[in-house]
Length: 167
Image (cartoon, one colour):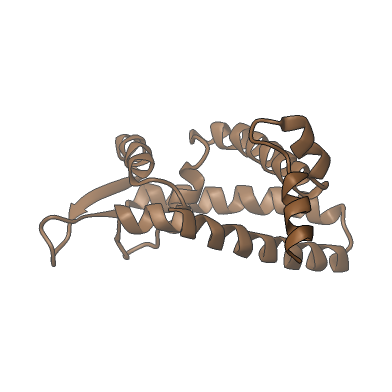
């Protein structure tokens, strides 16, 4: 057992040896990265048409009308740093889509809530997501979509759990 482990470790690629790492990689990571890039590129174009930047759609969709949320809760939900959320909030506040309000329970805490304009934009984002999803779904069989969604959900859970441990 020890010898097998040592041999396997000895054959592992050294840090910085990209070609050796690429040989070990299967098609999953390149496919996920490509899928992510192309999806974000498409979303970026569509979001620009409604006056939003990438990521702002996800932030708006994370907020519920009448239920303010803290910046730290938003950053955790979006899996980004609080400073990233703060920058997005600055831009969304400037557009009148969200408000920052003091917490009634803790004066040190700032909460974020949707404005009526933000609620309307959230509806536009939901419609935009729906149109893109409908276009993709129309090109695939339902059983293929169900299988893919199950697999992607599993992958998301695994990667999300790993990410939480690393933070």
